[in-house]
Length: 94
Image (tube, rainbow, N blue to C red; front, side, top):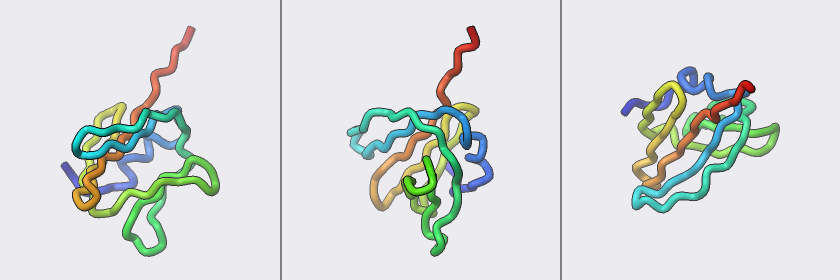
């Protein structure tokens, strides 16, 4: 796992994704389909903000450890015992 690098998650901006938050004990909310508008640091540099529009975002602590593949990015917040998951949606080209 690595520390958060905003540049590494830019590939998930402006493409269809599914997002979910999961507790470390396996309790998971359903994945929700969204399009990420932008990703930036909060003013205090303690969290990154992942925006779905001009107002709505979720924040991930900067101390979170991350893992990434071509189609999925995840962060684990040890203090909150939460996993943040973002995965690209497959697009059919019929």
